[in-house]
Length: 105
Image (cartoon, rainbow, N blue to C red; front, side, top):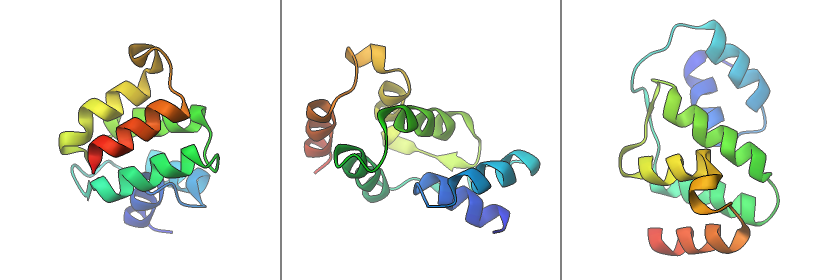
């Protein structure tokens, strides 16, 4: 997996996430090489609702997307910020994630 594949794999919550993180940490950051789409964001939220992804992994994912320069998050920044710090929303649960999904439609 090369650097660009690692950036995409992490953003899309791919199966080789740990490898992606290692590759990203060992390479120089390239600014804005991946634009997070609403579709990808919704897919990740749906996987959390279906318990394929844990809430703690969702929090980490959102934090990384906000902190790493590779990612352009655009209008999703506020949602990612709330997911990265669940206390803002009084905690995150399936009901809140379902509401967030509905707002994105």
